[in-house]
Length: 264
Image 1 (cartoon, helix red, strand yellow):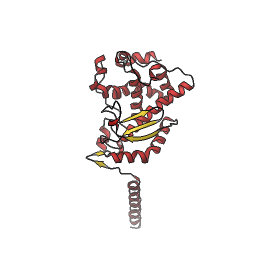
Image 2: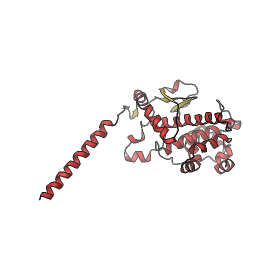
Image 3: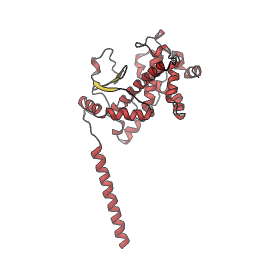
């Protein structure tokens, strides 16, 4: 009987500890406002303002490098060349602007329930958008460092306005692919289910395919290459190799083995 009461007491103490743990988590977890199931403009402004230093620090730990960047929010519909797919912009040298329009699915992937969290197949989150744009910042910072170290840079990656012959999208394709890959690798969004792979030149330049080509397929295109870079702890060096070589032609985008054979 004495042993029984001791066991009950231990269970009770365990439950109390568990209760305090839950209470602590609830107290520390921030709740940001939603309206009609989407983050509000003011909520996005507040989320970015409150968390930007932590988000930058978190990303720096992931890449094992230092970033010099500021993050702002704004309504991107007022900006030149606005694209309805656009969730954020990176401005050289070190400014990121995150859209505060009410079109994000959530602030973070962690807010979803178990099933939706597992099946969510988009980058339409405030946190993941920030991580994507931070990668743009890092990508361009690597270019600056390469220039300083006199490492060859393919000219397509240095043009402020990228114009390609025959509508080739190579440099943007690689940079966006790296940004989406890093966001997935960091766990901010799920690995994409690639249901579309371009087979023709028309597939590449069709505006209706832009998201599938420039983000989903682009991240798939660089995945094996960057997976190996992570295994060898040579991510930055591998990105330098991408930048030092001319970006893939349209034919090489359709047939990745041609491009990666060329840059070896």
